Image (cartoon, rainbow over all chains, first blue to last red; front, top):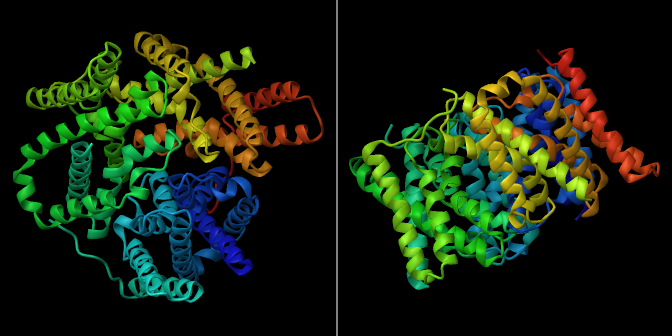
Length: 200
Length: 200
Length: 200
């Protein structure tokens, strides 16, 4: 449990960095960058928890807010270095969405959502922070424009459900499903894979 | 109750089609279309349920998600035919917002909101899915640009409250109020009626 | 308590005016202005309450909806006069965000959020209505573009927490913290103070 918790905090921090950097790119002030980092980091999980009729975890556990603050500070201090690390960030982001997706599916099941809803809520946990970030920045959300992103989460969430129904050990299942999401995402970025468009 | 449930599923599917078609028009990929169909279909009702401190119905009942998936698949397979059916879609959409509005008012009253809040929540149920769809597509929401839309819902919701307070039978009231919303909407589309603008 | 309640209603009305006037500026129809006034007025507080797993206050207490309706009607009837009163509106808005911020912090603490989360939720209460308004109007949110706004709330929220932990009387603390937010905001407007931008 302790490792999961640490990874969750780390993922939250990575998402905060990605949000704050998007704001920095748009020439938004320090507070706006903090705000954007914050909503990017907590948006997806908060929406999931609200739909499960729970209080989002950061309302009760300050460590998440500290992780976000550290992420924002990193994005401000190391702004130029981070751009050079873009590939590293893509790597961590791919790990992050995989992890958030699987944690989201599992939490939804724990609170007795239907299995289909758990898949949806898992994908929401991973991508909605970014959707809110892009909407605030007044851009068409990234998940609508770029290579396979949310689709990787959808695939991983369904895989987690199926392996679970086959009786695969939860820890192994979580590990494999997270890595599957990350791998699909990284392959899609590398080869610029994208889904077909309808009625184009 | 069974008929209401079927209409609710049908309305959800129609909203999913409208959302997915909006995404198709914008040249968004298959997953984006699915995502947009999904949020259009569940957005309004979910917001109402969250404000009533309930879990949205689709979290527990997968049939809604199946209805949405069918709607999205229809919008992908029958994309070109659906454009020719635009008038038919407007008709179903007008029925859909009437129905969702009345169901929203009734559900809010059942969970003991104030009467004024029930009116607001009824309108939200009908229109917020479309507002979220348009915001995601980075467009000024349709309800701000076009012929009478949400106003028809507002009228129907108030009518439903008034008829209810006069002791009109709930089933008859729901039927009449739904048709009133739909009729106002269809007349507004046909004659391109719109509300005045202030300070233009 | 009665005075707090009246100020809360008044603040809600001022926010409704500000939302409806933004819609009027954008050439949106009467219903759209009402809708925008409504979401501006209730957006921040509703989000806070949803995160605290509570029903937003307006769902149960119609007086808030009446206050919003009055605000919208004022913005329609007195549209031209209000523009000449822009400075007065800025003054009331500055008072309003200070008040909403402090009330938001206190309510979060009452419902046992962590202290850090209470600060965030206080800021959210004050600014998220405006963020939603700007997102609906398809504009980059004001808090990203203009002089110190949300930062004033952040400062006041932290101050309220610190004074509280020092044992300062709640009423005095609320009064001083509200005025601090308002004063920072008004000074920032007068001297066009803004925060630095990163990586510009």
